[in-house]
Length: 374
Image 1 (cartoon, rainbow, N blue to C red):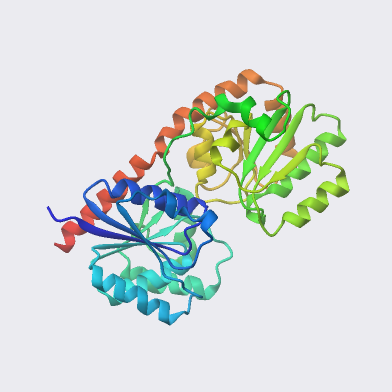
Image 2: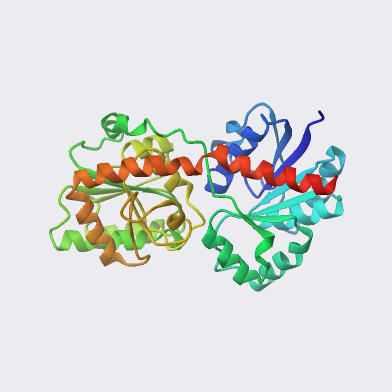
């Protein structure tokens, strides 16, 4: 049987949730009688390029786009799509969603699928209009959580049957990490007799780090912090502001910032994994931490509510509420039995978000759409 050709298009192929999921999807689909290619529209730095994670069976190209309106780049993409005769084009993130879909429409690709990975409350009107304009030419819009579906339907005024919920997923490969706790802490020069709250994500407003810092400041002021330490892995526009906050409130002993690191190392140190985000799609860092058996402290937001059963597989507090976050930290820090119970339940719940289940649903959709094309 001739292999159907699938093309994944994404803005950049750097370290990030959407990018990691595309890599995992492409690798697994390439083993399921599909010919698979990944295209990064924009250049990537070699040290963060996820191309090295792709199977040899997955073809990879960078097209060197300079901007959304790089029409030379559009023409290069069109020629490649037309020459390779793809059956399916799947686009991820806004620039790729626009460029990829318009190019696929012109090239008369039989099946066009796009992803909405998260809620995007800051979308400009012209972006919403473009998405709405392209929706009738799109066979299906895949969303990573039920809340993202509801939000996008309302934001873009699209019918519900245009969407398919397929939970954000990844390879579940973190279940042995916490056994390396003391070794990894030693590598980072950290004492082993503290309780570490760990989080990983870009230092941007969405991720809610400022509320975690306020909670730690409050607990230190009230002399209720004990041996709790916070490790934050990430880079972003708020880095200098957060450093200033640590300076102003003398929190350098309690909170340490690190650049992005290997997720296995991050999770090995996580006595509690905290995700204080204001909104998400469905955080892959969260799924990774669940798979590692970390007790979860998160917020009641999109995606997290799909993944965590409150009180059973994690503790969730209102987003943007540093007081509630502080009380949850104290409660979890004082109760190792609760932490162990939550971690075990989280590890079981993580199985619902395996890349195998995600790809089963994706290829099922493709097969269904292909039967209609045929």
